[in-house]
Amino acid sequence: MTTETGVAPTRTLVLQPVIRGTADNKGGRSADTLLEETAGLARAIALDIVSMRAVPLNRPRPSTLFGGGVVDEVHDRIDADEIGLVIVGGPLTPVQQRNLERAWSCKVIDRTGLILEIFGARARTREGQLQVELAALSYQRSRLVRSWTHLERQRGGFGFVGGPGESQIEIDRRLIDDRITKLKRELEQVRRTRGLHRRARARVPYPLIALAGYTNAGKSTLFNRITNSDVYAEDMLFATLDPTMRQIELPSGRTAILSDTVGFISDLPTDLVAAFRATLEEVTAADVIVHVRDCADPDTDAQQQDVEAILENLLDGVERLGDDGVPKKPPAQLEVLNKIDLIDASERAFLADRARHSDDVLMLSAETGEGCDAFLARIDDILAADESVETFDVSFSDGAALAWLYEKGEVIERDDTGANARITVRLAPRDIARFRRRLDQDMVAK
Image 1 (cartoon, rainbow, N blue to C red):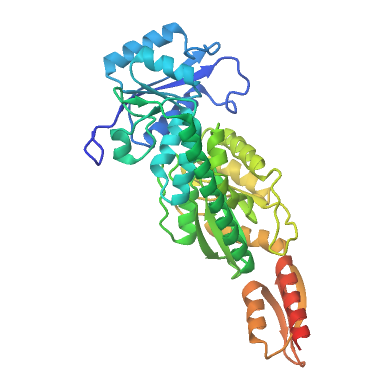
Image 2 (image 1 turned 90 degrees about the horizontal axis):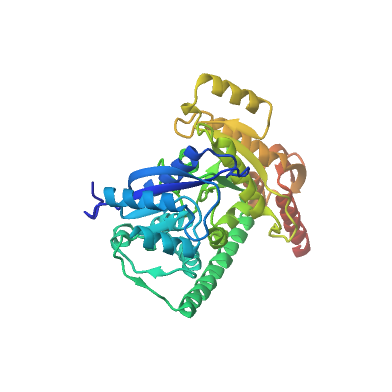
């Protein structure tokens, strides 16, 4: 098997350390589940997984993480299977990584390095590339920095998964710090630009609906289904990195903006969370956060806990202001149980009963479209719950004001028998305040 460039993918061994007796073992996931998730990350960049195994540990060894027996076993396996890369599905200290590479005479990377490699290969926009490079440099700062290899030329990335024999160079820490400082300045400009875009949308204004969820939960497939778009969507981890937005029309005729965001994952590296904060600000600025869950995944409950913890961390302490400077209430949240086409009848009945008893949960299949109309209707209801009914007297000659009310709100009644058009309309509070200011300005002008 070769890649598109004709280069054979790196032969890879995946090891998943599982520390015995830890009650908080990544939300109670089984060893097999942890191993499969790490393997899924490796497959996301087309590595050739020759072998994979979970390794129970009584306690981590400071020098090599694994005990001497395991280190010797793995060494023999590497020689026998001509392994070029070992992936450890957990964090490694720089000392552990260096010692394992010496013991095994091949490249070793940990979970953070693997996720960074995926992000480096997938980021397409300038913003995404800046964010990944910042996270990669922060990670590399205390480690040896490797030169680019055939893997990077083959599919992008940052050199964490280079093969044995790759030249290793020491980059002066000051140069890395200088680059980090420059990247932070550029990302701060990105953040300001995003802020301007959000303020521009607020002046329109359209409510923002953000799709969030565990990686590979089906967010991009749902986004494509709702918007008739062709955003990249594959059955793999981190298929989407760069946020995408599209304007949609809800059943009431109300216009909204739907945003597809990067997926979350358990133990998301701190450097990545910090680097992607500019992107994740779209989630914090949303009027509605849609938590898309893969209900066919056996670990969907553990994934739910991971996502909710990250959302809570993102929203904690974030000041949400409208374009008029008035604080906005926290975003509404809706839980979507996706991939119901992949579950059996009994599980489906159980989830349907749960959804019936909650206004904040619904079921759908982004793949088949089942339940998507109900999803849009529920979003409509959530947005409408925030709105108030007001009556305005508007001059017949003020066509722009009349058109604005029809565009931004739901006109319930109109009476044209008087000197002015009397319109009863359902509007969001911010739109009511905006329209009243407009009427007051018109009165002053006259």
